[in-house]
Image (cartoon, rainbow, N blue to C red; front, side):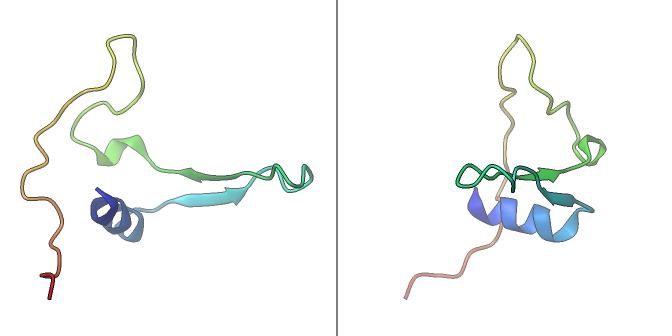
Length: 64
Protein backbone atom coordinates (compact mmCIF):
# COMPACT_ATOMS: atom_id res chain seq x y z
CA UNK A 1 0.00 0.00 0.00
CA UNK A 2 1.15 3.63 -0.31
CA UNK A 3 1.38 3.89 3.48
CA UNK A 4 3.62 0.82 3.72
CA UNK A 5 5.89 2.18 0.98
CA UNK A 6 6.15 5.51 2.83
CA UNK A 7 7.06 3.78 6.10
CA UNK A 8 9.57 1.53 4.34
CA UNK A 9 11.35 4.43 2.63
CA UNK A 10 11.44 6.34 5.93
CA UNK A 11 13.01 3.49 7.92
CA UNK A 12 15.38 1.74 5.48
CA UNK A 13 18.90 2.86 4.54
CA UNK A 14 18.23 3.70 0.90
CA UNK A 15 20.33 5.33 -1.79
CA UNK A 16 18.68 7.61 -4.30
CA UNK A 17 20.19 8.90 -7.54
CA UNK A 18 19.18 11.15 -10.40
CA UNK A 19 20.30 8.90 -13.24
CA UNK A 20 19.47 10.39 -16.62
CA UNK A 21 19.64 14.15 -16.07
CA UNK A 22 21.43 14.78 -19.39
CA UNK A 23 18.55 13.23 -21.36
CA UNK A 24 15.97 15.96 -20.68
CA UNK A 25 12.93 15.53 -20.84
CA UNK A 26 13.51 11.79 -20.26
CA UNK A 27 15.39 12.08 -16.98
CA UNK A 28 15.20 9.21 -14.50
CA UNK A 29 15.58 8.79 -10.75
CA UNK A 30 16.40 5.49 -9.06
CA UNK A 31 16.19 4.20 -5.49
CA UNK A 32 18.36 1.34 -4.26
CA UNK A 33 16.81 -0.68 -1.40
CA UNK A 34 18.79 -3.52 0.26
CA UNK A 35 16.99 -6.82 -0.35
CA UNK A 36 18.25 -8.26 2.95
CA UNK A 37 15.59 -6.30 4.89
CA UNK A 38 12.79 -8.53 3.56
CA UNK A 39 11.71 -11.87 5.06
CA UNK A 40 11.44 -13.44 1.58
CA UNK A 41 13.18 -13.13 -1.79
CA UNK A 42 11.77 -10.02 -3.52
CA UNK A 43 13.84 -10.34 -6.67
CA UNK A 44 11.97 -11.10 -9.94
CA UNK A 45 11.90 -14.74 -11.04
CA UNK A 46 10.34 -16.91 -13.73
CA UNK A 47 7.78 -18.14 -11.16
CA UNK A 48 6.21 -14.68 -11.05
CA UNK A 49 5.36 -12.50 -8.07
CA UNK A 50 5.28 -13.97 -4.57
CA UNK A 51 1.99 -13.35 -2.69
CA UNK A 52 2.19 -12.66 1.03
CA UNK A 53 -0.35 -11.91 3.74
CA UNK A 54 0.19 -8.21 4.52
CA UNK A 55 -1.37 -8.50 7.97
CA UNK A 56 -2.99 -5.37 9.31
CA UNK A 57 -0.70 -3.15 7.25
CA UNK A 58 0.21 0.41 8.15
CA UNK A 59 -2.11 2.36 10.47
CA UNK A 60 -4.37 4.96 8.88
CA UNK A 61 -6.23 7.94 10.24
CA UNK A 62 -9.99 7.51 10.40
CA UNK A 63 -12.01 9.38 7.76
CA UNK A 64 -13.95 12.24 9.30
